[in-house]
Length: 567
Image (cartoon, rainbow, N blue to C red; front, side, top):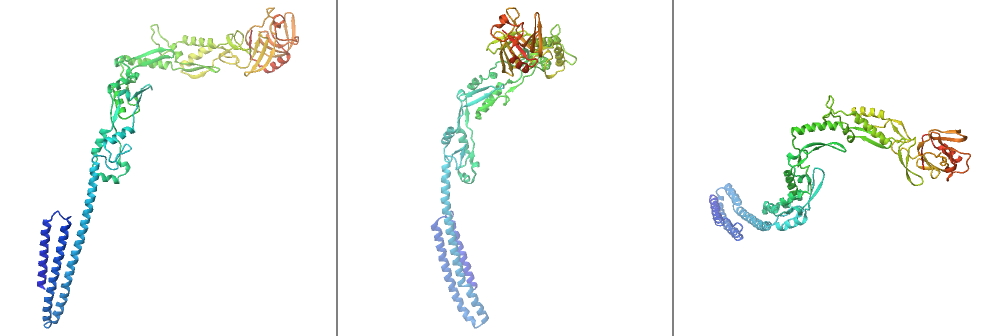
């Protein structure tokens, strides 16, 4: 038994030494198929020799076993049992391990072959991507996998364009500057080459598992333009073309038709250097418009002591002429604004402004009163001259009469002086000594009586609609009793009156006086109207009207109705 163990140990040591020698000679050649097969064959041969030796040893021990049977039955039985376990079964175990090692070797060989193929495939693509963009590369919306810098650059240039920029100044003016005007060009090649350098061609496989958004790249081109041509193009902007220096810019108060105004040339001054810098930034960013004020290109210059005093004076004037009183004449309005009150500032003999205890400018009362007189002259219509559109189609001028508006000048002078001092803010209807049918310059309105003494016709309009049209007979011009022209009004109405005068007394059914003793009435003693009767057989000055027309007019016309009388 001891001898058997020594033999097995010797075989194991011999096998291990032979294996180590072969591994040393063939280091780095694990993928060599002939070497692995040779080693396996030798191992199988060794295992066969080992198995034969084991069988021989077992036969020798069997003889010894039989000789000892008679001496010790128990020992013989035990020895036979050990012979059954240690002889043939150890040989089978060694063969099974060899076959397992052979299967593992074949598996390693197959895996190494597949790995070599995959490595070759991977390295081939890596070499391919050395001269082009990696797998799954998108730049500015263009698919670039495998494409060269030149190819991608050409596609990017074709996909975008730039026509120029619209420049807005601080006053809201718009000034276009075209790309051609400043020699504007752009190219992506430099950006593309830098990005290609960032990519590792041996890591292309990572893009297979990246999201599309992670692979998208935004590149900006290299932009160039001629600065001198840009500076020349900016000259079209008035603020930029202004050649005044900071010392040339002052503060000035001037009187205009709209009142006093301040000209402050120290405010909102364009900084040319900032403008150029802002333009270059916008152009290099493909901006299509730029607001110079929003870019901070405007600023204010400091004031000198003299300028500060002028600004304080302006604040006084601005407060003084900030008047918000409005006169209303019917549909017409007259604002008492800066254009009016700028003339009201009181001054001393040397022309210096007069102020109150609080430092506010004082008004000159005589100038306020003069304004009220001018206002009354313009809007007083009593006895004035009017233009009138006749029914016969002519525009005539009518002067005189007792109808019209007359402003109470003294009341308005007192009102305006106080209201201005109180800084009143209101719409004011003036006080009148006499008011017509309507306020304003067109005080006749669209309800009136028209007496055309040349045509010997009378018309009544109500709300612009012709309601009555009738022939009449007016004053006898042959006897110098002609009816006077002018704009008058119905100031009374009566029935069944006796009209008396030198040598006559006549009954009338309807009486409507319009000016003094002259009125409109029926004339039962007449049978004919119109024509030229008035020249020889006219009235004493009144307007004789047929009964039916007079009855209708009496019912429709109200006291106060304007009566326009003309030849």
